[in-house]
Length: 379
Ligand SMILES: Cc1cc2nc3c(=O)[nH]c(=O)nc-3n(C[C@H](O)[C@H](O)[C@H](O)COP(=O)(O)OP(=O)(O)OC[C@H]3O[C@@H](n4cnc5c(N)ncnc54)[C@H](O)[C@@H]3O)c2cc1C
Image (cartoon, rainbow, N blue to C red; front, side, top):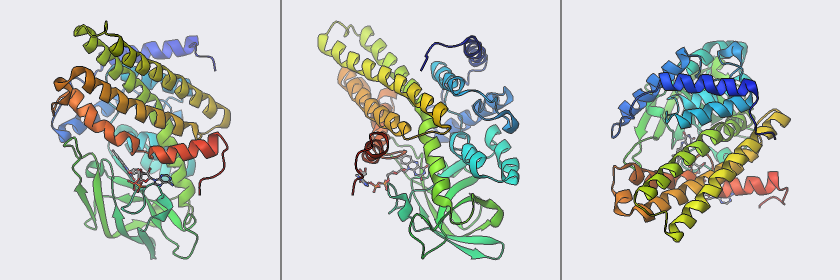
């Protein structure tokens, strides 16, 4: 693919760069998660008012109808400006595109606007205590009741559930069908007494994610997405958008962290040391490969019309490289990177989850082996 920007893309980038310079969200609030989330929510509001909340969405749904390359430029400039991901990232990158693919006209009309403005936050209720990698093994049940459904079960690792209005929930609706076939995709309203959200504390001290206990929650028929029994296919749309959508932001964030580490090493006079230069050089090489692979993923979307399994390759490479980067930072900066509450201490601890969230490395390797390389299926 041609990596040179066209005149239109250069103009898009310049407009965006000027917009970020004039609308920076300000300093990141540290040590208070609620304030941090509010900061990201305010920033999303500002993006929305400027028409930048979801450039890749079609104009009819409030986006700019940006091309894939422009969308990549958006994430690159967001990273360059050191601005955060908008608060409703799961709605913007996962929920919105899933609704556009599977939702009815009424559902799109009702839900897309508040996703874009950040007025309604979305969370993703897929994983369960015994169904993570093997998502189709999930046990949360939805039973028909009049003009709706009664849901009972437990979800876990549900990011941002404590702030969410809506949950993209996959539940079992046919108990006799094969496990991938008996699932339905719902939008569950979080604000009901039958849905309890219990934050889980992470190694970083934060609670990004939660347990959800669902004891007879009600979901009306009009909140079924993509038809009863079709939940597996709808969930795959969400998962493919998750990997493809985040790929650009993640590789840009990694580049930014690496540049910070190189600056810190230079300030300490460490770049003259061959071993240090070698480690940083190896990370630079991986960051470049990641950037080029992310662009190659775009070319695949342009060719096939939807994200393919290449997103799994980018997610796998990013998570391992990000962990190595945090490790090298700890080796180079010593005590300064190991103190809890410092930016590098945070990166070191938070990176541990990278090879689990959004699909574990082992699962991604299986996908790449089977669906990119065409190797025989794992048993
Ligand atoms: C920070 C973070 C945020 C998250 N946010 C959300 C969210 O918002 N919503 C949500 O639904 N989920 C979320 N998750 C959950 C995440 O998707 C799951 O943790 C992940 O899919 C793995 O599932 P599991 O934890 O049940 O592990 P398991 O599936 O039990 O896996 C355990 C181990 O076995 C390995 N393994 C499993 N099956 C195979 C296989 N077939 N071949 C080889 N190895 C295998 C895995 O790689 C792993 O090492 C989040 C996780 C993290 C860390």
